[in-house]
Image (cartoon, rainbow, N blue to C red):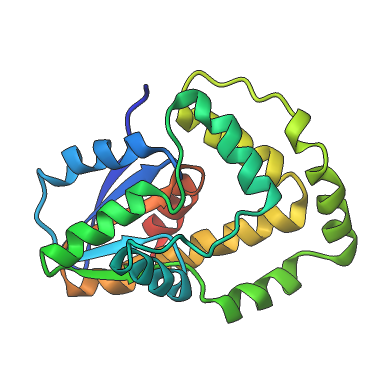
Length: 212
């Protein structure tokens, strides 16, 4: 199994550690645990919205309930195909582990992605009606789509190219990368950071972060 995509930056006199994560794999939490044991940091960053962060925290605090997040059809297909590399669960185990680690060690944990309002605005700006229809039609054939990959990182990147083939969706993901990079840069003023980023987004986030 391949190693993390990981990068280190120095911003605002702080160190920023970026770790690429394949969402859903239980083994990713185990790998992350080994990595962050070596580090001390002041702020943790997750590639989710503030609403998702709130929901994740509530889910973790109430382990007696099931998550009310119903995966979309593409997410279900993604999870099914990813199972060839190990156990897959929702919410992503790497996210729950990292949030728990930060809470237990009194480390700030912040959401890096757009909130729901800004995501909706960005979606409407980049994705046309025709592209939305085209995406819906494409999703019907995802279950039959074969994705050859030697490891979960390769799979995640190939899946991303399939699911975001249309230009509007590529622009939307690029917008997410830019927003996350700006938030990382802003939060690094508080001290050293450990940041989780989806493997398929980490190169874009890294590119934007280097420009800031």
